[in-house]
Amino acid sequence: MCGHCVWVCSLGLVGLPTGILRFQATPTAIHIVLPNEIQWQEDDPDFSHADMLGNPGGPGLYMFRSKGKDGSILPPHWHPGDEHFTVITGTFLVGVGDKFDEQALQAIPTGAHAVIPANVHHFCKNRGETVIEIYGEGPFAKSDLRF
Image 1: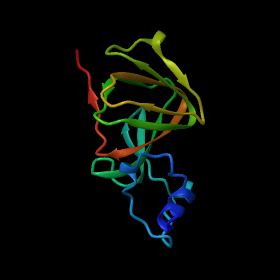
Image 2: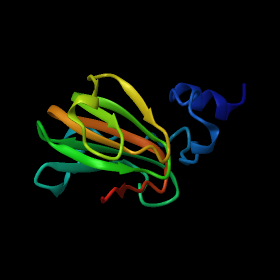
Image 3: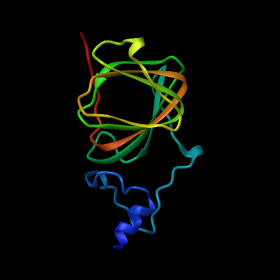
């Protein structure tokens, strides 16, 4: 196994599609963000985000965290690329469709990972203060559905 493969395996990136392994690092440069170094930026009164790796708005691998208050809702929207996420705290509820429907929400608990495929119209709600970590191949974009 080549040195690059050993390094990728040690980071746990083996299962990721090779197209998103663009983050450039050397074996002597470890990217670490400690909890007290996370810089949250308020998006609106209910949501904030923190960039963890890369630039979500640019090309290449990105990772950011999104934090929402209990009961906060993301109205129907979609993304042009796959949305990979892991629930860090709380419960993230997701439903598929063009209109928000409380009955269609599926609970994704703390510790779970999910992928919403590109162009799938969906909506979300938080149960408890919820933090999710979103990653993928940039640029990350969100398109609201307005009817």
